[in-house]
Amino acid sequence: MELKIDKFSKDVQFLKIVPAVPTVKPPEYPDLPLTTGEQLDSFNSFLGDEDGFSYFVNIIAITGANGEKDATDRVLAKIFDVKLAMELNWKGTVKKDKPVKIGIQKYSRLVKLINESVRVIVLPATDKVIPERIQYLLKHEKT
Image 1 (cartoon, rainbow, N blue to C red):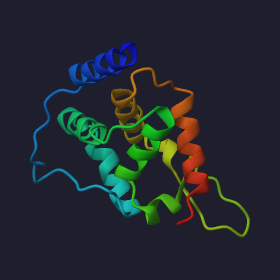
Image 2 (tube, one colour):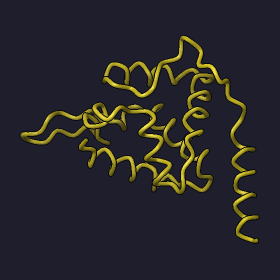
Image 3 (spheres, rainbow, N blue to C red):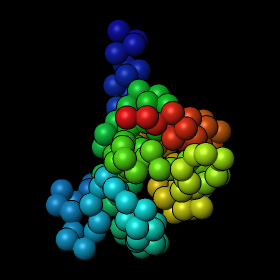
């Protein structure tokens, strides 16, 4: 019984945090998932708009998850197409005999969107776990 009450109270907390989100995406807002580096650049610029940023945090957070790692996985899957994810890594480092990767860390608004979305899904998500999980997923993206 206690377990059911705990789960119910977590669900109520989540519903209090997630504000009402328009069900129809405004036509001027970009589509997700992002598929190219150019879309990544323009989306990061777009996130400078506070209303657009809030809209995407709430739309992405609807996916839900169990735990910080699962939430980060789902948020990244919602934002990036698999093909684009394979072209990304955290720092954008170049290795000998490997294709050049785009560093996601330089897209501060996008990183903030990922962090905020995960925190809406999982209240106690930390600054340590989210970037570590992003790095892990981008490093191991193969398919």
